Length: 72
Image 1 (tube, helix red, strand yellow):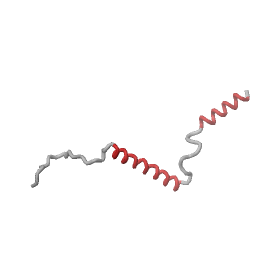
Image 2: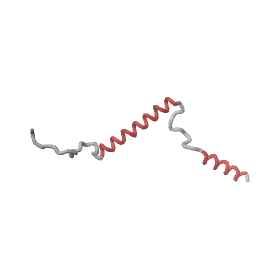
Image 3: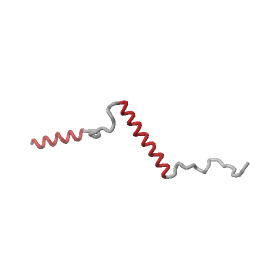
Image 4: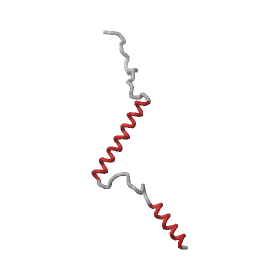
């Protein structure tokens, strides 16, 4: 009976925990904002790197309007 009660209490404690045991950000609000900005900046740069890898950042040579190809 004691093992069952201990198992139920342990299961409740584990299931009620939200997130990680060690928090990823600081508890200080100013430091936490700085850490979140650094994290989001790294994710923004990842998108630029992905576009550069697949050559999506190259200029588009098709114009939405017709241009004259010669010298005027």
